[in-house]
Image (cartoon, rainbow over all chains, first blue to last red; front, side, top):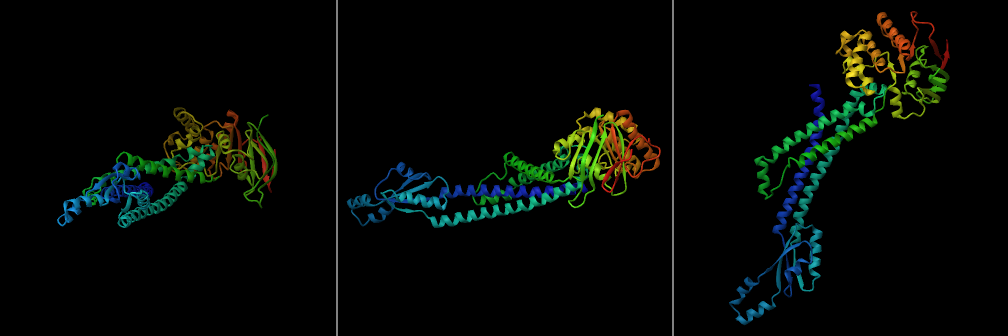
Length: 270
Length: 223
């Protein structure tokens, strides 16, 4: 029971790090997926004095993925009842050309500014409508959300690393006598500290498998899928291979680094 | 004769303002049996600590088994310690390990194959008359038995030097005699150098052995 309790404190601390890390990944993936959704429904309107080739417009900025010329027919239709056909044709020729530009991805505020400047640098383009105000607010909200989650994950990381460090120091005190006796007979540092590393690695494995279980369950839970579906996001919440390998790598690395720090700091008693 | 320990103007201390051993000069021949006596707090255990490298000399030089301990690296010190067997008054056995594993410790550190180490442990347990206690943990044994385990551990890897710090301090007469017999046996049969730190030398032991006495920080050769 005492042994389980000893393991539990390190396992829980490691699990909190892994949990906050995976939550960060999920948020990051959700935001990226949401950005793709926004990009597909987001467009820029450019107004030109004379007709432009679609390819010519696409070359203006790499963020432009496609161009669609907007037909002036609906405007002309409303006016045509009061006009002669010849005047309608004349109007068609004098009206500016409207182009709807679709974007390759969801742009940052800076990229929107740059796109606007690039388009207006073209002599034919007289006006650009980019809905930057609405776009900026949505984007800043997303960034704020991501930053809050990152900050939270960072604080969890710092606090739990300190907790793990304390826990390993307790282990070191427990094993101090054994390490000292082994040192008296000339055991190398790695041999004296083997028990500490073994415990740290075992706990890292336990925490990783627990995290795997929790996220594997979460990734297929109807409630989670429903929440993401309701905002039109379809992401991989937990990749059983890639994410598990990252989790395992992080847990083992943290344990080994902290155990090494403890071992290096150990002073031999005689 | 080869010298296993050479001390020249050796001063030992734990702090800068207090010297425990002051400018001591002595040497110990390889294969000899040596007693170091002195009152409590005279510096006997301090000297033992310095011999196995747990305390660096403050001044002078101390050479053990050809290794200058003033500026020895950790890896060289480990190598030296693998050729030394140590026995303490408080046994210093690993409580979580069986007595067999405790005895096996120096063998494993020295890279012995497990089967060879197991055979050696069996022999040593018989030698210290504890073969019936095999598989037990140190705290299941009496003080005298624990010290015999510590003795077996010190002998297990055929060291060039055995350091025994008050090895019979807490023991009954039977166990004490057994420990003395084991130390004398290692010295006479295996030609191991034995250094024993003790309050008093038992009457049953040979009077031919070399004897140093520590008093007021100096080490004096009595015989």
